Length: 132
Image (cartoon, rainbow, N blue to C red; front, side, top):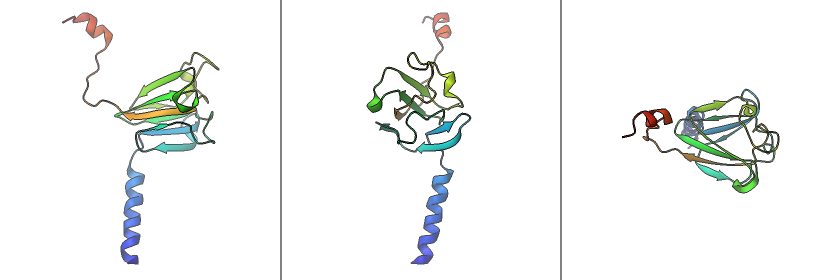
């Protein structure tokens, strides 16, 4: 029995380590410091206590969108929607209307979901140039 459990455990650990998380939040600029990975689409009503008001950077994988809120339970005065793939090394670069004026250390809850795959995005200038 032990001969089967160890290889199975190693296989599972290798598979999880090789998988890119759809969303990873970091406590320090440049994606340093502590990190929290989210592997499934979900609504996070409240970040873990050590991450509330501490997120300074994030990574979003291709095919996923995250909506960030400055309040708990998907509420608050501001929200920011980001579609991957994207790496934001410093949330101070993301404008917020209230509070400090940026998203650094402002995230309290979030929604992570899969983006609509296969939908081609057209820039507004292309739409204006080709009205048909």
